[in-house]
Length: 352
Image 1 (spheres, rainbow, N blue to C red):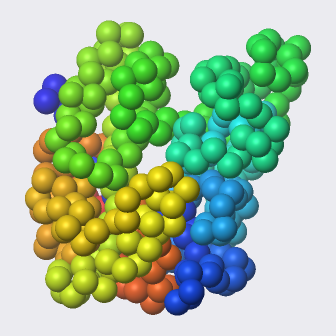
Image 2 (image 1 turned 90 degrees about the horizontal axis):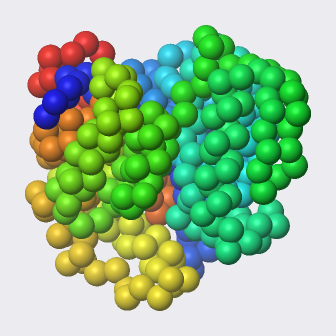
């Protein structure tokens, strides 16, 4: 591929999935949040590059305000980048979002990022008083305002989805002249065009099917990025895939299946999905599938295949789907940071 980078950042994304008991009831939120802080500390200690935390407003997730948890994580980490994955910008105030992440950036000495998206759930719309009829215009206008705030300390802006701003200072400011802003994409060409036109890094969520199906979209993004006049040397593209690692491939997959299937069925119950099957799970674990559930060797091979397929600059392992036990998550993180990441870097001839 043209302008393919050999450097690829490796990191982890989480939604703060709650643990569930045998009756399907979620565990205490506070305990899960404290576990998250321990998990991020381990990510930092093992040299992983970034951590992204999602925003949700459902009982199966512990995190509705990622920036608060990330601020706590900043106090126990040193080098890892800390960001949202994602912030549901459509139902948020861009001024407040920028202030929150600029504050995180100041607190962490320049390690904050922001990933925005429209979100895969809709609970935040009625919660914050927005109409789903405005789904498209909300994201477009709020992204426009967020970018203007990111580039200018004093902002003049007018739209239809919030009050106008007239030469209004927005403080504090992120360190180093700017806050990195990524766009999460589910697979629609419209989203790819928008990100490319704006010159924003893009993260493709590949959580099912054959990852190769995304190759035309990634190629389209690259072509448009240059078409809109952006320097291809600055292009960043990542993928977000469901992952879980253990010491033995099949044993890990067998143990993780009920945890993963439980979450797929909780989500599916509200969307009319058929029950998640073991055959779906195994198909996802195959070479043509989107899951990385197994040992370090399998994961290394598949991550390198994703890099070859897309020319990635970032790989995000989404690791807590279904709320696996904290001890198992810590083991998965350690395997990723101490075994998989070094093997991937060595294969790509890059330093940690």
